[in-house]
Length: 76
Image (cartoon, rainbow, N blue to C red; front, side, top):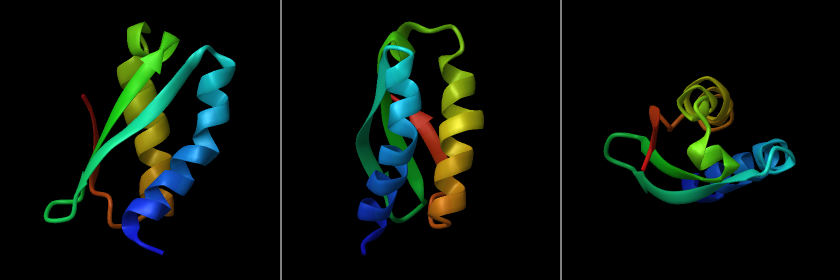
């Protein structure tokens, strides 16, 4: 399984929690050279004042545990 497929599987695991609050997450890109994963928070999550915390302390932490190749998650 490729790194991108692993990332998408991990995102599918956290997606129901985001959707329960009216939001979602979209895979944008993964840079293999530096391990940076770019995501877009959508719906209620995109406008939420806690979006950065959700991205860094929630999604990034989980994805990095599941896919060690990911060094950082950034929002776009």
